[in-house]
Image (cartoon, rainbow, N blue to C red):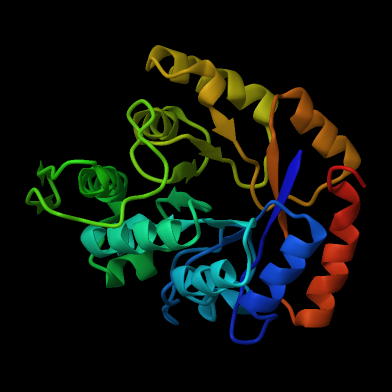
Length: 284
């Protein structure tokens, strides 16, 4: 099983370049970074995990800038977002960012995307909360038009683009309805989420990885009903605190990659956590 990691990189933590080199040298599969553009001080949205919102949420580095640094000092390490808040981006500019990072890294980028939880943050980007899922779906379709091999126009409910020359292209070839880099959708299990995954993604990023024995059959059924290749579905438990039993359970479910959570901390603490995770790497 491939073991990747995620971490809230901030102006107070280990640097992207130091972490990326350590991950590649030790044999980890990838580095996934979260995104928050800002955290409004006057908040009404509760933190999904409960309690006070951790300090790092308001200090998070831009994931594309940090992953660009990580790409420049590595040659094999996978690079991903967990997650990109697509609703908070201009889709034409985001399509260019994603394609450029994927191209410059040699096709190592995974677009982990989601719909967000912080109402105030999204509102400052002009996002209407009730329609954010439809907005993300629309923006993904617009980006697929820009990533298509031939100039392709798109006219959607929330945006449009003329048939355009837009290079570079993501490294991966189209597969089924999916155009662009490896694409995984984060969020809680349910018919709406599974419909989005089947429509424009390669698979699912279930946060925490709980309850997969019950939810995976429903996703696989939706995937099959959509005419997708059963062997192509990817499920990547995200922000996991691994144990031997948990990883064995995932393996029994056919899962091939897990993203472990690192502390948002300085170099010494992060490297210590990496030492502890190394025992789960294949061949160790």
